[in-house]
Amino acid sequence: GIQVEQSPPDLILQEGANSTLRCNFSDSVNNLQWFHQNPWGQLINLFYIPSGTKQNGRLSATTVATERYSLLYISSSQTTDSGVYFCAVERMDSSYKLIFGSGTRLLVRP
Amino acid sequence: GAGVSQSPSNKVTEKGKDVELRCDPISGHTALYWYRQSLGQGLEFLIYFQGNSAPDKSGLPSDRFSAERTGGSVSTLTIQRTQQEDSAVYLCASSLAQGIYKFDTEAFFGQGTRLTVV
Image (cartoon, rainbow over all chains, first blue to last red):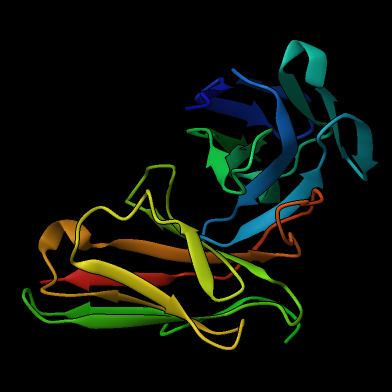
């Protein structure tokens, strides 16, 4: 099956710093989503981005489908950004399921 | 409803008992998914529904696990004879994906059911 690798696995930032999270995938995809799992376990949709670039406030994401990777940028980080960031992909075949990476655990210190 | 709703939020059960977990997808969403997340781990796919049928049950870990969906809406995940290793958060998601000529769409998750088997 498709492999989804996220890096780094853990990240500690000082409030105000910028960061880049990476997601590599091993096959062509129809769908790619970034999620933030908050400390209460809720998965919050950040971006639906099978290709191209999107921005939402301090967050932006870029997916280069031909090179099979996606990047999530967090600028001017805040303590509320802490949590786990997941990348999930849907393979380009008849399968509908999202396959998740193992996540990047982010801690933003005040 | 406005979002995916799961019930109960928390469930503590004794080993060997059966449990039922419920998922109400977003209204109009034809695709429904169940995932499991063990403590500190990623999300493990369990089963996918398109309407009332389940074309992909590949993630169900054993025959103690089953799921159904009725009326193209509510889904129930049943775990029989629960074991301690079944303890996890069970997450449900829904999306608009339809038919074999699917179009790409976004999945939305519920808040999950935290299952503890003692």
